[in-house]
Image (cartoon, rainbow, N blue to C red; front, side, top):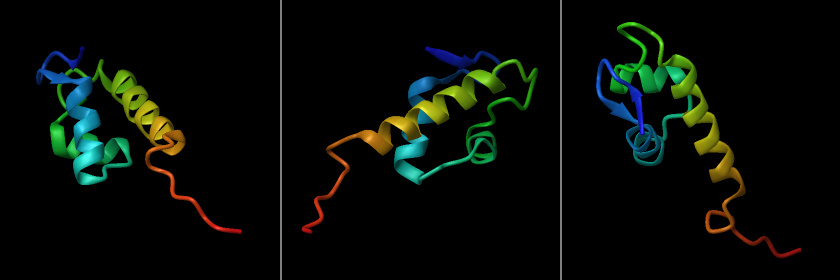
Length: 69
């Protein structure tokens, strides 16, 4: 789904950026992809995608490592 119509940025592109470059902040997403630099209407949606990505990564059992107690 498109997040930014002005720059043709999709949700998948934001997720890929987070995964591949480790982007954790909206400023990083904006600087790398140009989201919210034109009309600005996409800012909230881009923030939501970023937040959802990191929340799901936090709870993704495939990313967790077991610690012996």
